[in-house]
Length: 443
Image 1: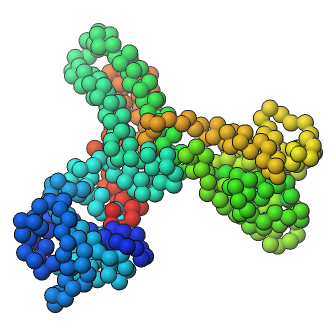
Image 2: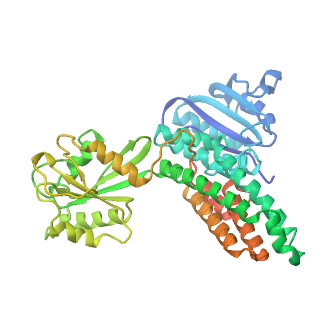
Image 3: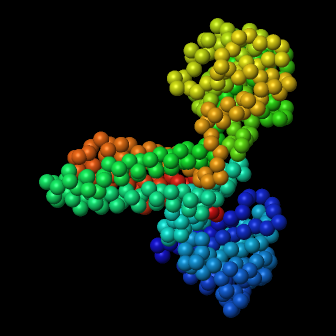
C-alpha cells in the first residue's frame, strides 16, 4: 500500500481523564472487530457516532473501555478512513492501545503526518495546514483567533483574490506573444499598467496583514540592556507584574539572562533581563556580559536603560556604538521619581519602582513592532512573508519591463508561482518535509 494505516497518541503526554489514539488509512472499518471484539454492526458503522465498547488485545482480553468513533473517508480530516479510540488517559493505557494498532498493521505516524495527508488529499491547502500547528502553538488568545481564521481559509482566500486578476493578466499577455507587432496596442487595450497597479496595491495590503500575523505567531523579543544598577530587573518585574528577577542595590546582581513571556494586546512579548554591560575582571560577570551581547544580536528591540538622574553618559555611548548594525533600539530613562536629566523626544521616561510611564513604554514597544490591532488578522509565517515579498519584487520588475511583453509575461509567471507556494499549489517536496516535521505527533 502506498499509504499504509498510521497510528499515534493524539493527546498530550502525561495523565489525564481522557486519552485518544488516532488511526488513519484505507479500509479501517474492517479494524473495528479486532479492536473491539464486535463485528462492525450498523451502529458501529454510522460515521461520527461514539460507541461505548471494550478495546481488546490479541488474546481477546480487555485493555480498556471507552468510546470508538469511526469517520468514513473521504469525509474525514485526512480524507481517509479515520478511527479514534477515546480511552482513559493514563500513559500505560495509551501505549497499550497504540501497540494494539501497530500489531494490526499500522505504523507509527510521523510528526504532522495526519495533517500532511489532509493536505495531499485536498482537505486543506498548505496555509490552512500550517494554521493547524499555529493554533496548537498559539501563546495568546489573539494569536489563536487569527490561527482559526487562517484554518478556515481567510488567508488562502486573500491569496486567491490576488491570483485571480494576476492569472487573467497572464492569460491576456501570453495570448498576444505570437503577435509582436500588436504589443503596444494590446497593452493599451487591456489597460495592462492599470491592472498591474491594482494587483500591486492589493498585494501591499495582504503583506501588511501578513506582517501582523507573523508578529502574532513569533511575538516580539525585547532585551533590556544598560549599565549595572540602572533598573533592568526592576523593569522586567514591572512589565511582568511579579517578582521574576532579584532586585538589590548591589551593582551586578544579575549575572545571567532572565526571561519572561508576557503579552501586549494579544502580541507575545519575550522580555530578557541581562547582566549589566561594563568592564569587569570578575569571570562570572564577564560570561554574563558575553551572553548579553549574544541576546542583543537575536533581539527585535534592544531597550537601553539609563539612570534619569544623569542621563546618557560616555558608558552608554560606548554601548550604543557597539550595538550590531541594524539593531532597533529604544532609549528609556529609569528612576524618574528621583529626578531627571535632559532627554529627547525619543526617550521614554519611567519609574520601574512606582510604575510611572510603564504604559507609555508598552505602547512604544507596540509602535516599534508596527502593531495595528484588528479583528480580521490571519496568522502568517516567515515563509509567507518571503513569498509575498518575492511576488512584489517580480511585479515591480514587470512594471519596469513594459512594453517588453516577453519579460512582462515571465515576471508575471514568477509572481504567480510565488503566490502559489503559499497555498501549496507549487511547493517543493523538501519544503513540505520541513513544514510538517515541526508538527506534533498525532496531528
